[in-house]
Image (cartoon, rainbow, N blue to C red):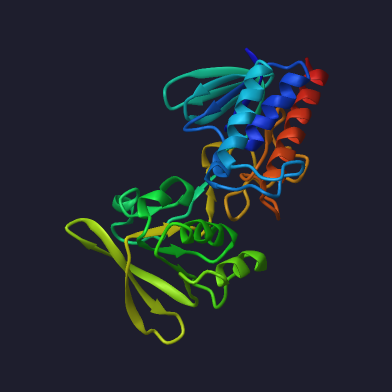
Length: 305
């Protein structure tokens, strides 16, 4: 029996584990893939208070070392359900495990939104990527496209511009929506081209290999083909909250409909991080949620047991 079971090993989940352990509660973190979540895709983190610059992987590794040093336990499994038995919660995994706890913090994060094009799934990792820091080196000296125009897409493009011969940003809106500072950095690059108000209609392959994209203007309908060696998709994120919808209300976009208190309709179940409905999704807001949810879980346990 654990005091607090945390589903998700991103910044929110690991912060929750840290605060739980520091408050004398035993914490178990269940993570299905790798610790760190979306922050591991960031080659440079320069907006975290007290740290001039670090990589997302450095941050994730440091957090993992920190919670292990505090006594937190970890399991690499995929949580698929939480059973509410009143004073006891049971987290069930796809691997068949059942973990008992007094409280649960759900910090499942988000996953990448896909373009929804024929053949897209088969090309992921074979021409289509989501992480420039992970896969950018594979395209050194080559031409790539970036789908999207928000902060994530522009950050990807900046990193790729340092490695690739040419980077073409494909934005479906009339203008880029990322921070002006990021736009200014890209504007200063001679190997970056921006095409706005465009739609990606299809993926070009040859003998199964990715060769480019077909696009069309949303205004005129004019079509063109852009030969390229890789496509980095950065068009948004999708929460993975479906398996836990019975425990906490979801909004129209699938995020947990919970405010900054990180509470749910189920006593003893709390939510934290990017999976929660919020106006700002940043590293700082994720760790803030983790602390808030863990402290709320600690109060719940102290009052109930």
